[in-house]
Length: 344
Image (tube, rainbow, N blue to C red):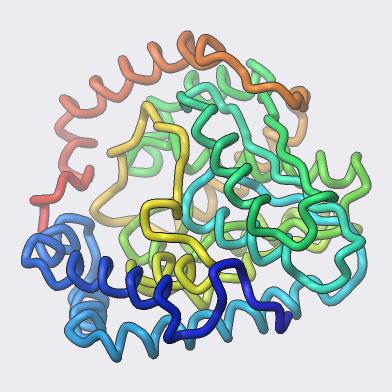
């Protein structure tokens, strides 16, 4: 992909310079360092990030490096012909992947952005608006579309009913782990049934490094291997996983893809956020993921719709999820391993 994205790739353009100035001012503020420390990153990640943001030239060099690597990796990932189903949350990673896919070679491909409605997420209008923003920057927008996929209620009942027992097994609440497994399994099965070839996932390394259990390399490898075994016709993977390694990386890649900092994500709010653990037992997580995959494959799928769903779809599950979340936060065995920005 040699195409220049909207706003122009020229690294000296006014758009690029203004965007770099904006993020540089933000990152060089003392509060940014405090924010990193409050997000459970290790010392190495924080030091490497702060070294880059100390210089506008280092920021620029990092951005160009990320852009070139992302172009190369997405071209490699999409080297086979076939249409693309992009799991789309409206967040940084899925936005960047969507823009890369829509502007990839072989413009005759269809690119379908699909947003999961899982019972915890509110404000789906945000994601639809982000999809319009992405399509406006695509060379293949005539063959691109966005839909919502409403999961079967049995999925969410399964997540909620098992949450308390799971938390004792894992040492932290299983909401995000189980939810991500069922969402990715649903999407690969949808891709298979609808005749899509490629499923680029939004897993990236820096999120795993801040103890997001659902983003860990352990869970990623197990789930991707399972999907490849069950659906060999689908090319599934995480093309940006090794590229996006620092918390500044999604922002810099977004700028290089033509998005101002304020345009780079517009996603739904999650009712069970804030349940990340301080530490993760990888062996326990591995066994848990394998067991969940075997159960989830027997649960009926949901429905794909074009219109924006109402928030009422989530409210029933969200009420129960919040009740469980509050119970976890007063359980001393679980609370001690929930990261709240002060544990370290």
